[in-house]
Length: 96
Image (cartoon, rainbow, N blue to C red; front, side, top):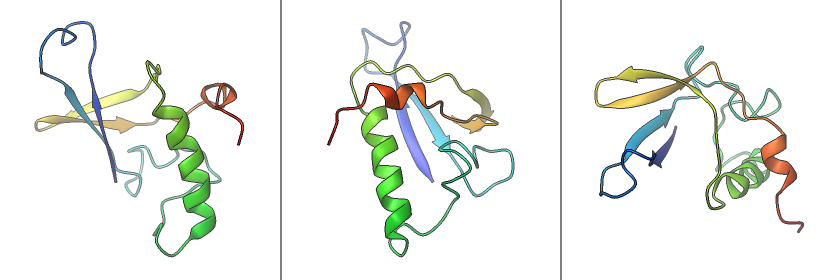
């Protein structure tokens, strides 16, 4: 499970944000958000998956990153649904 705290133009000048959840274990709820080569798993036990996920997260944590995702409202937050991150977001990643 992963949680994003996001702001847009309507919340830019105040303290409000949108809480967006990624439940990768549930069918059609972002299970392939990081690609089919990175399924949901225990990151404490799977070091290779942890390294792949770290690469994706570093790309997402840059300033002003645009992510287009299908969202479904569940209670007080949104859930990412049927979305896969594109490789183009990783193209601008800093070389290691």
